[in-house]
Image (cartoon, rainbow, N blue to C red; front, side, top):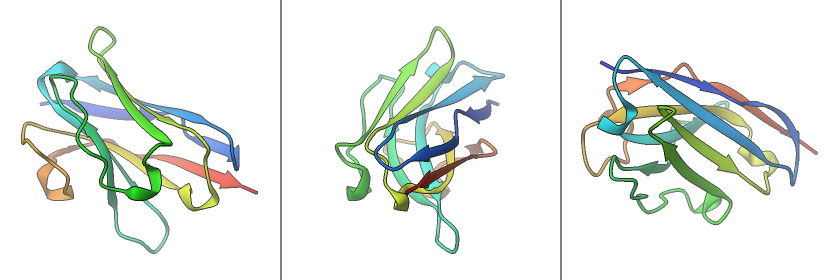
Length: 124
């Protein structure tokens, strides 16, 4: 099975950008559809967007990130990235990547493999 590790989180000012990376090991990330989720304090984990193993992007589920967040994959590096632009205070959360063989997959339960999460904090 695949193991996932997120990186790239940190503290950023509102309006800034961050790029999160999800590094896979154990199996090629190209074998999976990979999604990004986030969980803010006191809220449920929400689906953001996902990329299929054919590099197609599933329609955004979270309207709040549409037009600001993009997803990409680099199978040679065994990674999937989340580019976040024009960050807002409400983007503060722990961000997770997850992998699945299910398609389409927009729910937590669709994803059996998860990373440990990386904290993103947006300040004013």
